[in-house]
Image (tube, rainbow, N blue to C red; front, side, top):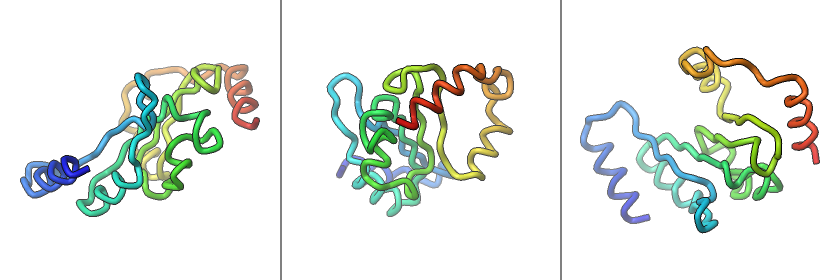
Length: 133
């Protein structure tokens, strides 16, 4: 975490960036290590970083199925949480979780979202049922 703190300080103090974002996996796929999210959030708050957790391997497994962010109780501290619905959930698609403002911005700015089609109704129902359990 010392290296992250040093890099965050360097990036913020450089004045080169409007915003700095820290991106991490929630669970690293090759070895199953879990990100030190509480420590990462502490550093992010210290330096005003945005936080982005790719929870493809934590969703459905940790935090009573809601992922590593929920596991650590950091739902109000992480800016972006993304995950897949095709691994532990067993269907298709993915998700992005964040504030309403963030989601509205992504809907307006994300070209892949703008030019893609929605999930089929059957897939949507299967996802809904899978996350209920």
